[in-house]
Amino acid sequence: MTQQGSVDLPSSNILGVEIDRNAQVKLYPFTDFFKGFDKVEAVRSTFGDEVGEVLNNLKVEFFSFRFGYMGVSDVDGHILISTHHLKNSEFKILYLDVVHELVHVKQFMDGKQLFNSEFEYVDSPVEVEAYRHAVKEAKRIGMSDKEIIEYLKVEWVDPESHKRLVEACGLKME
Ligand SMILES: [Zn+2]
Image (cartoon, rainbow, N blue to C red):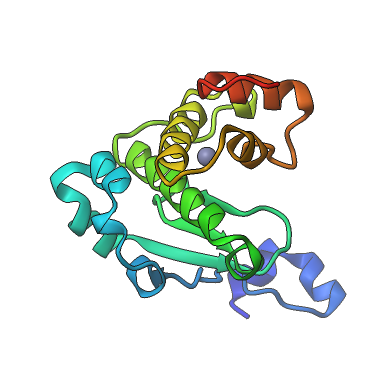
């Protein structure tokens, strides 16, 4: 490669390989895959009058890793979604996850820090806000408290933290 490359990375010469480290993430328009969300009151209330513009400009990235479901990039605010989750999860779970992630998109737009190591996942104010919003919508679409509590059982959260999240969302464990 370039002369500079060979100066910076002598080990690449020794190993006889080259790695181009400038890969681009493939992004798609959110609205190619998710339609009608601009009409959902729970989403309209997140973005207000800007809802159409925000969703039209929003990008989504898919990843095929089996673990993890959805998230929002803290670099540019695009949504990341597991193709496994997209294909296999129950429709209303996917729907609520999108409603949840869109809260993070708004938080990113408002300059809030999405990842904060100061808090545990379930105690993070940005997560609590997103979960409360999703839980409100879950109730509206007719999910029972039991179903919602199950929905809040995120796989990387231990029972004690799950209980805290449930209570932060105004629900009671039996
Ligand atoms: Zn979240």
